[in-house]
Length: 416
Image 1 (cartoon, helix red, strand yellow):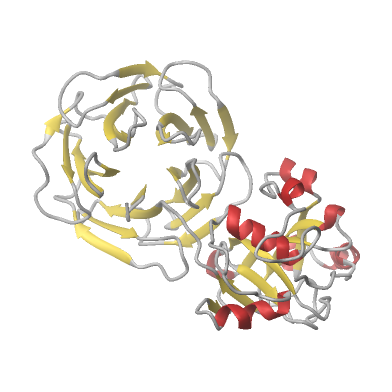
Image 2: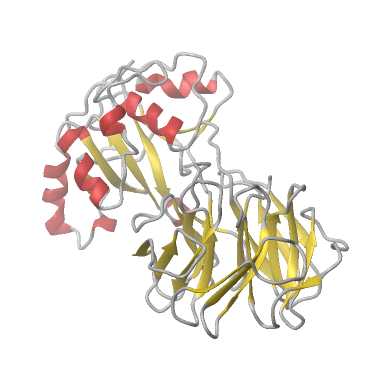
């Protein structure tokens, strides 16, 4: 099934408004990019639809169709299972989905389907759907990717739509948001150093629940990992004694017997250095920029010791290649640059890019359930998390506040 091709002259409307509006944020909508190649060059990927669009997804009509594009992105990018029922034309999606237990409301979330009813301003008689790629603070705007726009190169664009404008403006706020179940692995949390407590958000969904527990006394460094032979667990590192205290559960209580690794005052690391499953420990020495990684949860020598980057950076750990093995990197807060290396050794960077403003706290995690880790940052002055799908510069994919300001952010697969 397909939606009628949108014929409204988007570019002409934006151009006519430009002399009256000082910046794009004050327009009802603004096109961020148009065409597969130009969008990809700006960090706005179509996830291969330019090559795969000739096939049908979710029983939709293949090709330059909004419904087929959305079905493809929901399946490949957000890992939503294919519905076992026919959704129909774009304007029928809300009622079809709702009748099968899918949440349909007026609340945007990253990964949701934006839907415009038939007859909405500039929309044809069969409605229109797009993918919500980003949601602004307090739902102030959304960024969508969409197919089947006649004025676009390849019929494709990414557009920012600002909230609060009347329905007779292009591109108007969607009529509904459809929240198909999407799969993510990692989520976020924070540590309150004043109280010694951790609160974790179990998913990145719009109605995510959270879990709070006491770590230990204030002033420690919280840890999270899938320790070998156990589900997601917590723990902490005591920088005064260089001792790791691990627990095979996300809860307070007495941890396993502690062990020391390295000198005091280091920055602890957690990752699967072997690729065989289960996280191990390590540390980064900010004085000389060296990484020290150990394949066992015990005291003993490091299996990997090497320098990467200048001293004084913020270390990163993630699976940058998607093979199940953790690698390293660093974030330079002076330039907001992420620098990653696809090996556990000294050598040149595999990739380097700027993401976000300077002075943030970097994050790495698998936000959308793919094989590779992705990046993000936490703004301590606002308490907002900004996460991006992908390992490159570009648009923020998830933006939300969680907890008070000036916390220590965490990222892990809390559900194991």
